[in-house]
Every structure is written in structure tokens, then in C-alpha cells.
Image 1 (tube, one colour):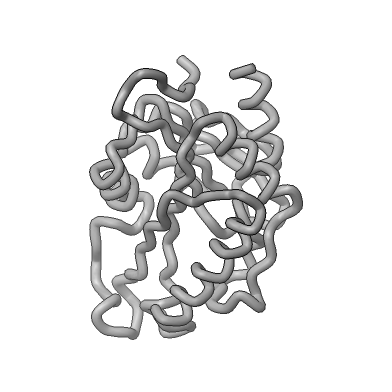
Image 2 (cartoon, rainbow, N blue to C red):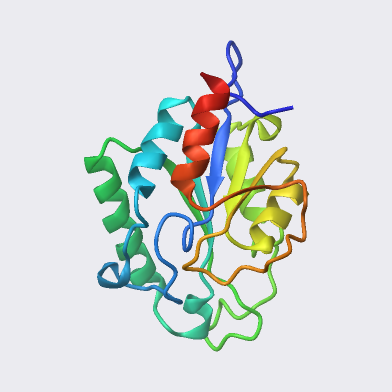
Length: 196
């Protein structure tokens, strides 16, 4: 069954989004807004998904913090900057959930094994609890198998793999039930056609 926005309920449907490679180009360990570039039509896609009635929730692994490539303060400044840009385009991100951990990292206290690093579903579960989101009416959108696995482990029924040429993606999908699109924009157009 295709997840769709809910009516007459306290539970909200959501689009859970990985960040790098889905919303912006993935140059690897992006810690400043100067290195952050939105993918083509990504902002338009987010606005479209929002207008369909879905809450937008970003769930992102940022092991660059644990690895010492940038600080948590750097990460927060970057997040505030792109959220501000999105707001200027009338795109409201409900929240951003981040995992800064990496067990083999060098920066304490982030160099630990955690329950929130995708493919574990910790970030999604935290968002669901905090905002009363309906996982059975939501989508998880990511460019890596770990994103899809996290969505599946959390109980999300709509799994979407973005096969962007800007990211390293395998030619065979580990999770064949996931829908595949070349961009977030393509997914938003498809979903619009399904719901309209």
C-alpha cells in the first residue's frame, strides 16, 4: 500500500530524508556552508513534498564530528544556515536528527558505538516518539543501503533509494522493495502523480 497523508488523526505522516546525496551534493564530510550545495531542484522537491501534507524530517549520520574533521558547533552553524535558506523558500523542516558518533573516531565523547547511527533506526524512532509520526504512512528517502535499512528497521513502509550520480551507489539494490529514483525531485513528481 502506498503511504499517503493522513486525515482526521493525531498521527502525522513524514518524509524522513538523509541529507548528503539527497538534499545536497555529497562531497564527503561537509562541515561548513561554503561546502554545502543543494542538488538541482532539491528545494522545489522539498516544497512539493511539504505541500502534499508530509512533515519533513532530516536524519543524518555525521561521523565527521567523531573523526575530528569538523566540530559539533561547525555542524550546528551549517544546519542553521541551510535551514534558513529553506525557510526563505517556504520550506519548513520539522526537525533535524543527527548521529555524530563513530566507534573508530578520535574525538571524545563521540567515538562510541551508539544506537542512532544508520543503519540502526534510532534517529527515526526518536523523531517518531517526539512528534507522534505515523511510520506506516511515511517514507524514508536515502542514497545508501544503510538509509533504506534504517527505514525498514523502524517500520517505515515507503522506502526510496535515490541513485544520484553524485554518490557512490551499488548497481544492485540490497533492498529490492525500495522504489528507485534519480533525484529527490523525480520522487516528488512521482508521489504528486500518485496522490493527485
